[in-house]
Structure formats: structure tokens, C-alpha cells
Image (cartoon, rainbow, N blue to C red; front, side):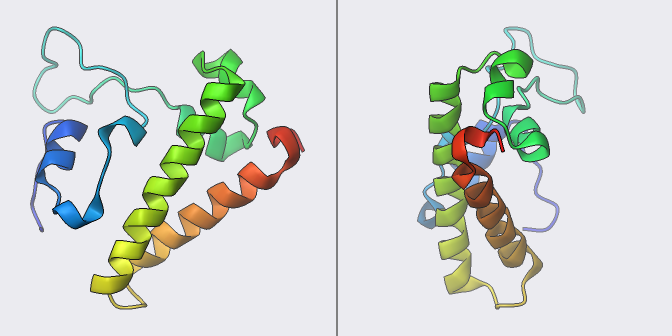
Length: 122
């Protein structure tokens, strides 16, 4: 609800209602460092999904993020599926004009469009 604060993605996943079926492995993050980060700082992350959304080319994820094309395709497909599941769940509980519902649908559609471009190179 309003004002919820989560210490890390795992905290968010474990706190979400079970109808969302969130999978921690579909979030674009890397392991938390052995030493806790100072309060209020961000968790280290790999921006592979953000980078893909910017340039739409899986082949660049190897150069920029160290993610090979096969793994990139699988990660992006799983992320897209997770967004689709969340969108479906929101469809049951949120009104059609809900900004979160609309945003999730637009995000799914954009990822789907980028993945349909042959080899992500066009």
C-alpha cells in the first residue's frame, strides 16, 4: 500500500500477494554484496533490461552487460512473461483506466515488439 518500503527486491517479492506469482529470478538485479549497503542507498544492479529497452538490440547486451544473446533472450522473455502475469492480475483488481495497469500493458507490448524485430538488430 501507500508508504510501503522494501529493503531489496527479495523483500518486495516476499511481501507481494501470492496472486501475482512474482519470481525473484525475473528481476534484472545482481546479488546483494556481502556487506550491507548504507541505509538509503541503492542495491547494485545490472541494467540489462533498461539497456534493451533503450536500444532494442540483444547483441549489445553482451558488450554492455556481459549477457550472451541466448541468455539475454531467455531473461527478456521471462521478464516479459512476468509483466504479462502482473498485467493479467491487475486486470482483475484495477479499473481499466488505472495508470499502473496501463503502464504494465504498454511495457509488455513494447518488449514484445522489440523481441519480434529479427535478431533485435533492425
